[in-house]
Structures are given as C-alpha cells and as structure tokens.
Image (cartoon, rainbow, N blue to C red; front, side, top):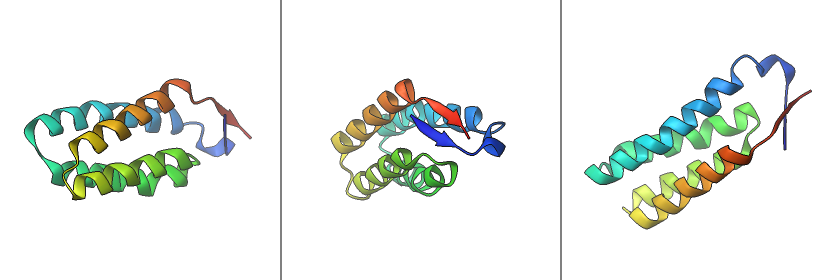
Length: 95
C-alpha cells in the first residue's frame, strides 16, 4: 500500500501505466542489446518514482540502470520482473 497526495490522483494511473510500458520496452531493448536506452529508462524511473511517492520504483530503476551500465542482462530481467510484480500488486491510497 502506498499513500499518495490527493493532488496527484489525475496523473498516477498514467504514471503507473508508463512503467508497465517500460517493462515491455526493456524486453525489446534487451533483445536488441540496447543497454544505453535501458540505462536511460532505469535512470528516469529512479528519478521519477520518489517524486510520485513510489520509492520502490526508484529502487528498481536504480537496479535497472546499474545492471545496464555493466551489460548485466540477467540483472535487468530480474529488476523488470520485480517491477512487474510490484505494479501488479501495488495499492494506492490518496490522502
């Protein structure tokens, strides 16, 4: 359960949907070996997650970014799996 400020209610669903799209995109990028783009996506997640109140997304983004820096495909897959599980189970409460 994550508590999010009421004023973010209009943008949170789209933010979370964007992270779902990131999971799919990272899968395609892994297949093509585009570690630079994966690193960028991870960096953006790392920066944006906390801004929206999703510290877990920031942590996962950092893991994606770090794994991409060293071309650790398995580390990237693991982090994406973690993100997919988080997105499937996160419950948002607006305060």
